[in-house]
Image (cartoon, rainbow, N blue to C red; front, side, top):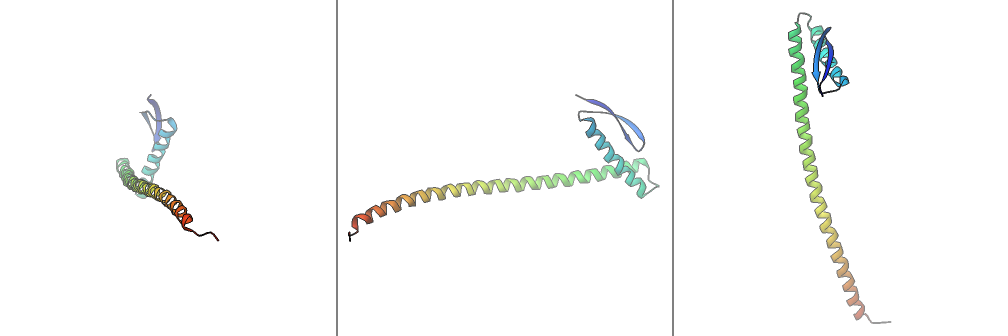
Length: 119
């Protein structure tokens, strides 16, 4: 359900429609306001349009870096899961080998007991 909200950016009120919560939209609007104010404070000759463009560039840069980081984490996680799967298979093979060797040891002890000379 779309929420109709008013947000304030650079002392101008904008009416927006969003599926997000009011708190979320206000948080985003405050981030935009802070980013644009930072541009305008850094260069008082900048226009609101320039501030908006630089803020948008900053946000896109952050988003792109976050996507790259997210993809790297996904790749790492996939690699870890593949390693874990291989290690589980190796552990299962080792358990089977232990069971086989335990049985073999038991059988060899039985054979040995038949050949031992009582004292």
